[in-house]
Length: 81
Image (cartoon, rainbow, N blue to C red; front, side):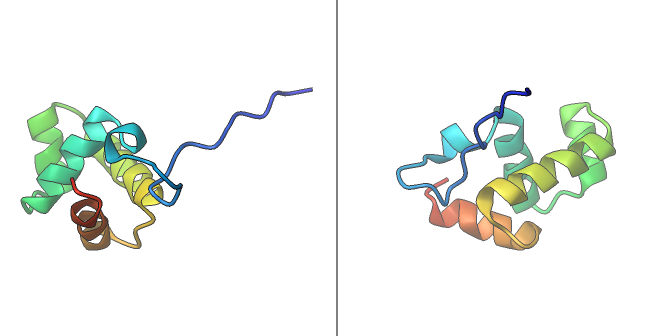
């Protein structure tokens, strides 16, 4: 029988800190989103494919409970960056 892995932490969990919830790259992507960068531009800065950035954005939105990029940035600021 396959072992069930624990769910990834989210900011919705009591006591969760942003550094424990988001990976280094997800935090970097979020900072660049806050500066107005597109996925293509973020990919250039981080030297990854835009599809990788899109995946990171989906993951960080899920972890932050955000509906879109702007909501993710707002939640990030409310969480104390």
